[in-house]
Length: 546
Image 1: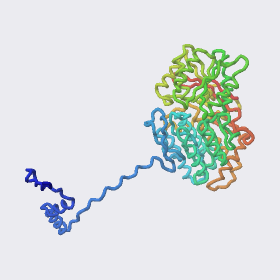
Image 2: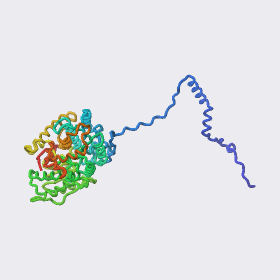
Image 3: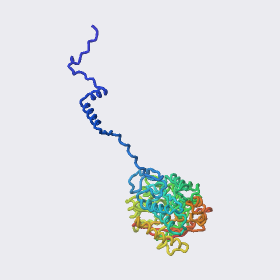
Image 4: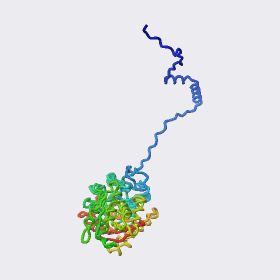
């Protein structure tokens, strides 16, 4: 018989009865009928009857936003390049743009920025008319920087002393007073566009920027920034830029206080007879980084000017590229070639960090003495590439190893124990240096406790001083007593007067070559040939006036 037998009950199978799960609604109803719920009802009723207010817990407030790392119009950017020795992170945050000193761009700069801000505030409080000069530089530093942290620091020191002198000394007049703004374009000058936009905006608003000084290194980014500011007829006063073609011939409103790379190489060649050995042969070592105008033009002038009667190169130039990896390995290879060929002198066209590695490699490889002459990018200390590299560098400069000379743009001893008596034409500069050294000691040393031992401060001082002299040319003294004395374009107009009205810079007399018809370069500007010692000191050996 076909069919389906009835399904047995759970009892028939000996299993516990099936429990149907309670729904959410069923659980809620059961709770509301429970004794526990009744106790809660009674308690709440008693509290209400007694007039007690029961606070209701509010949702926690949203977290407060973290304060912005930059203020006053500065922009926060992340530096993903390898930081300079001593930095805490490989991806540090930099503040890029223009500040009056109220934003600390680097904790190590807090002291000098505080002094600049104090002087800016004092100028504002006088109620007299004033203008501002923007100092443009890669103020925050990293391993990719063509300048060193120490060099930038000293530039800010020199710029501040020049500002202080402009406001407290009648040397170049006393009207208008001068504020100093700092403009950071980032470690590799990669944020130059943002920095320049803020400068140009400040030239047309209440900040009253009428000129720019500094400008960083002789690199592609400086060239691009100079073009943009020149197009707007904003006067620029280069401090340490030396590339032959980075001047007023290419950028109409640019002058500079430093000698050119051609002048540097000529000074180096004039110094060769003073070396212990007869220099008949040379080898050139050069950085081929296409963005660096300094290394490119310095190397080009060595190749052009060294060969002559009784002098020739040994082989082709040995090259490296600091923008590529394994730079140190390549410099070791070059040092081995030099040890084998033994040239009378090695000309080195590279930056200070490359020079440090190169000298260290030479000291480790060569048994015979080697003489190296570099350009002005020669500021080397423990912060350049780290303690180990610096120790290798100093060991290499020991007796009988590497002799390192460089064509420094300025040196504190150039008017005293370097090169004999001061030429008559340079005596105003020597007097200006005496005042500068005194002001440095009284205005900076008590607050910062730093020695004055490098020419970067001198060049930055002279860039600001030349800007002030241009701003205060007599033609502008009749412009009235308004808060803004004249449009910034008039400063560019005044540049033409610098060839007939020299400025007594502390690094030498500054006479600009007939601006408007030539290059805007200084004429017959002194250069100091210096020697680097094993203890880290740099001594002035010769003063050369092209």
